[in-house]
Image (cartoon, rainbow, N blue to C red; front, side, top):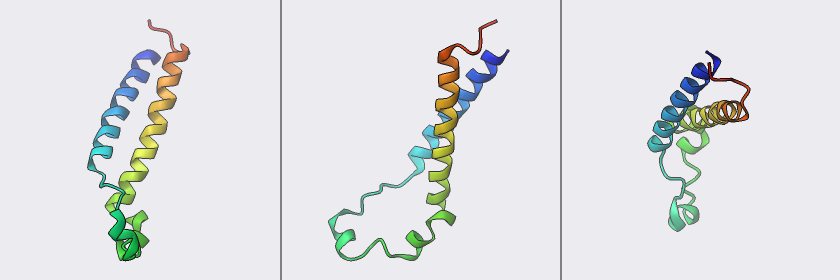
Length: 81
């Protein structure tokens, strides 16, 4: 029973992780962005409240859930019955 639940958690976390990573924008602003001060925009200062900030938080949370559940499955704390 626990094996099935952990497997479902790994599957759901991996799908959400793939979607969150695919929806994120690229981090590199290029050379022109660093010279002209492109990082000092309104959106970069309030990144935690923006869509990009939420996607980063979701990515980190899902990554932790995925790795913890995968390690628990791999170590064999749950037996397949």
